[in-house]
Length: 404
View 1 (spheres, rainbow, N blue to C red):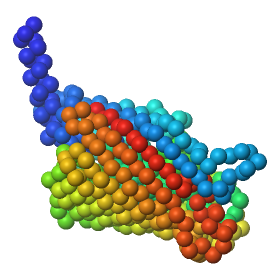
View 2 (cartoon, rainbow, N blue to C red):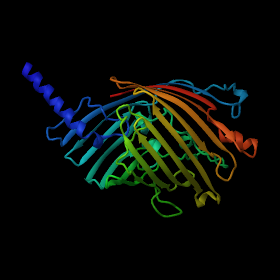
View 3 (cartoon, one colour):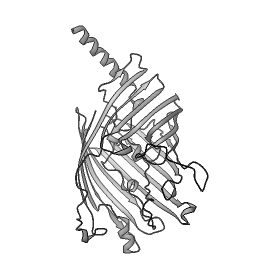
């Protein structure tokens, strides 16, 4: 019995060691594996690895809305959408096979419908400079979305990425936002000379909530009505880890510059062609993290809508975090968005502050954040009221996260 126990311990130790060597090849976009060996099944040669993972987030939220948009007849309160929530409850597994194929599947029990299947993909790497990924995964646009979910600087993504834009037409089916997130598709990607990265792909363009092939051909352009996306990065000091704060990475010196673009052909039901372009910057220097993005979206209606105008939107943010101690990280962000469009004066300015505390040794992380949404430069009171419609003027979030 003692011999069997010793053999089992030796097998687990070997598997953990093998997995630690390949942790970067099996990253899943949800839970970082840096410094976490955990439970892993692997062959002695290292040509097969299987790693289950878990991420659970529980948060307390308080949101205060200003009087615009509230209907006194329905006794609507300024404080709404407050209480406790489970943003993510992700269970998944990732791994590697035959020294060429990596795979990942994850379910988010906090979601519903098609979004229950958060990720499902496999990646075939023919060489470092050329690989093919197929399935459901993050689209190649926006540093904020491409960061490992469990290692974001603040618990809430920039509002300029997630809030739907304001269009001067009463078309409820046309509510695009700048961020694209998870989607179904295929992409080619690679790394050249450990400095230049690229990702080019075609996706459904229907987002994470749809797992079906539901698209058609464009009436205007006569091409498949899909999302065409690409991202190119330059990392002069080697590959940038997809983190905005990790106590296991306090000795890094990495730099990233990136450009990305996408075209979502007949993306909405009514419908529009949405063109996006973005520029990103990230710097990781020991205990310091700095990131910034600027993105632009142009929304153009199809011919059958008989709306000749195009609408342009600009947003961006700059954020930074610093580990005051190996467990405490302070954070701040300034977010900017002209949600009414570039042809209308005025924009939202959204400063936020917060902190992260890492309970080392048990994979717990505590995040806290406060954000204020201000409005400035609008020509009319109506423009001012519309700009933050549906957005909380004051919002506070406390989030506790466990990963395995």
